[in-house]
Length: 130
Image 1 (spheres, rainbow, N blue to C red):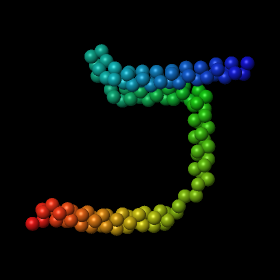
Image 2 (image 1 turned 45 degrees about the vertical axis):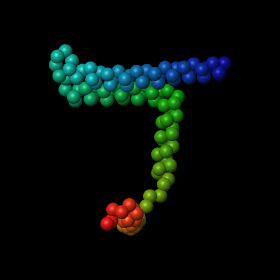
Image 3 (image 1 turned 135 degrees about the vertical axis):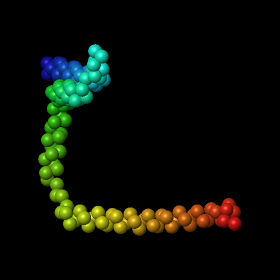
Image 4 (image 1 turned 90 degrees about the vertical axis):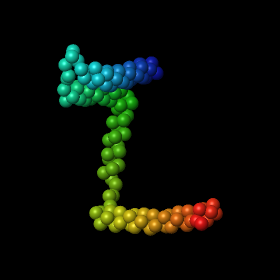
């Protein structure tokens, strides 16, 4: 009996996700359809607000499914993990950024030198230096 319940929940979840997808597609189609509706230009503001409302509705429908609830749980857990992280201080961030910049400059000069040396060697081998 519980397997039958899970099957119905699964098919209902599939229906919810399909409805959310149809809402998204209808919102996008409506955005372009109402660009020039009945010979009148509809304001972009109204079209964007309508699209956002339909996207929000599709989001709510998708989140009401089992997959959506799992996603919400994952997001809550992720937020808790981010709160546990120890972030570097401002001084550490500036010091690390400066170190990266210095290394980038040094490697750029080195690669420029290697490129110039190889270019000079190729020109010499092909007789372009004469």
